[in-house]
Image (tube, rainbow, N blue to C red; front, side, top):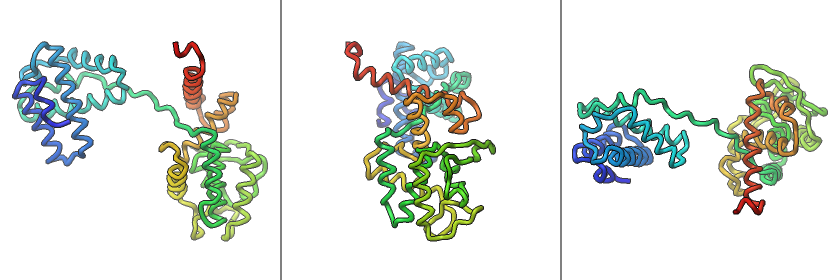
Length: 314
C-alpha cells in the first residue's frame, strides 16, 4: 500500500503529515519495507474509520480533537472484524508512533488519546505440535542423514524429544553414564527440579545404538551427545538438523526440536493420558502450564467434528 492511500479519508494537511511520517520511517529510521507497508496500512485504515466515525475527511484539527472514545470505537471495529489481539496491538502501536510524530512536529495533539488506551493482551500461543505420522517420519529420516555414528546420535536425540518429552537442553545435558539407560532416566529440569522419565524400548535402543557407535570415549560425567570433533553437541546442530529434515519431508515450519516435546504431550493427551501424569513427565511446576494442552486437544477434536459430523455442515 503506497502513501496515496492517505488521500481518500484525509484532508490535505493530514494526508501530507502521514506521508511525511512514512518517509521519516524510511529515510531516518531505515524501517524495513515490511514495516513501512504495515504502518501505511494501519494508519490509512484508522483514518478511513475515523472519517466515517466523525462524518467527514480527517484533518489535523480533527486529529487534535481525538478522544479516547474514538480510539476505543476503532478497537471495537477491529474486534468486529475478528482481528486477533496481537494484530490489534500492532495496529495500536503504529498509531501511537504516528501520534507522537505529530506532536513532535507541532502538527496535532493526538498522543494523549492513545496513551490512556490499554494495549490488547495477546492470548497465550498454543503449542504447535507435529502429527504422529510427521514425528515418525522425522525420526526415521534422522537415522540416515550422515555417517553412521552421527546418524545414530541424531536419531537418539530426536527420540528423547518426542519419545520422552525432554527439552533440548535436558537431552543434551545427559551424561556419558546415561549411555546405557534402564527403564527410566532421572532428569534435572528447569529450576533444578528433578523428575523420573520412563523410557520406551525404542528410545533406549536408540541411545544404546549411538553409544555403541560413537568414536570418542564417553566419560561418565562428560556429555553423552558429542559433536563431530568430540566436544559437547551444540543445540544449534540439532536445530539445523530439524530445519533440513522438515524441508526434505515437506513438514510445517513450526516443526522444531521443541515442537517434538509439544507433540509428546499432545499425543499422550489424545491417547487418554491423565493431565497430572503429563505434568510430571514434562517437569512443569504448575498444572496450569500443562493445561494449555487441553486447548490443543479440544481444537483438534473440534476440527475432526467439523470435518466428519453430518450436522456440522448444515
